[in-house]
Image 1 (cartoon, rainbow, N blue to C red):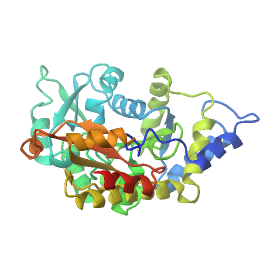
Image 2 (cartoon, helix red, strand yellow; image 1 turned 60 degrees about the vertical axis):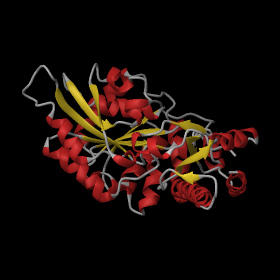
Image 3 (cartoon, rainbow, N blue to C red; image 1 turned 120 degrees about the vertical axis):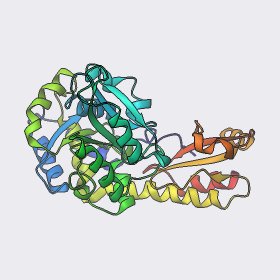
Image 4 (cartoon, helix red, strand yellow; image 1 turned 135 degrees about the horizontal axis):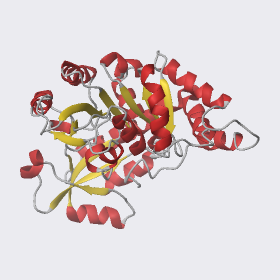
Length: 348
């Protein structure tokens, strides 16, 4: 009953087999091999557009490089208050952008409220040198709350960003989970909605270590080559990242793995909804489920082998969580088994 994080799951067998298959022999280094080029072409096919692809080792690297590529002196980046870039990246976006600041924007369900976004941007008029100036907007898809921005909601965020001539970045650590949840295409969820840069995650969805930064404006690619090298993210044997993505995209494996993870989350949510003692904090839309459990029930589950994290109670839930209760996050993955979901539900 491992529901701690999709990062805990291993690599899908097809990914591991691809790594082994490409382990021998020789291939040109630093992203120049035939396999690298093949996977770059596949990304362009998936997004229905020629894109620039930069392999990196972590999602934090992808996010930080994306934001540093649009750096401006005195720059301010706008993100949701609970966004990974704001809470879980140890200042990396600020570090790699040489001092840009993150301005948190509130909003329900892990999504930026566009009225609040507009108001926060207006707090930094570009002509007021002492306050700094707006630099970029970044949104997380799927969000840190396990919810998903609809296409209309992405449009709304993009409209605010574009009205201020700000680039829009998407943190897609769980990109595939959001994509299958919406039942849309990669193009429709990104550049057709106004996304300029995308952090494309594979590690949480069955890869060993495969992340990519996608630029939809090819004119920006040359600068990114230097930024990636300076950040120590240019892998000499990048074919091993390419090998993972090669298997990941083959036969729509990436989408099928995400569908399974989402289905396990829905199964978990359905079971908890039927419980007499436990309840959902809100409805999940991807592969993260937030539940309110009695603290003794949570302890009992952990004693039985369940692994999950307790979570900060957001302001809007403060009055809904009793003193003997807690908020907990459960994350499913491609490796989650239905029997483990059912065991958890039976015990809670």
